[in-house]
Image (tube, rainbow, N blue to C red):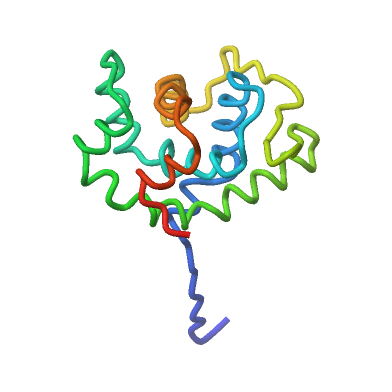
Length: 160
């Protein structure tokens, strides 16, 4: 074969790094703990838990009884890009819902994602990144559980 072939590969690293397989494992871990999750509240999971800086903030403050407001105030550089992460991860979130509903792992009932069966992760090695995320899920849920979804959107400065 002679001549040059120009192949342009358009790889969106952020999308690839935050793929539906990882998202599925993260959400199944959450749904193992809460059984159901409001769809609008679920949109906040990915920009929070798929961001390494945010996860590190939760790890650093895991023993601390820090509120969400305090976490945001103490780490403004981490949360300034939250809306951008929110918007860029919406397609991955929608794909997760579609795929997991198709394979009969979740249902959507009254605007809630409902877990149809528990996943036992047991000794499965899903990687260091997932293990780190999984370790902060209880802290994350604790931070958001007492707040209404509208308050969460406001404090995280989500622009719809």
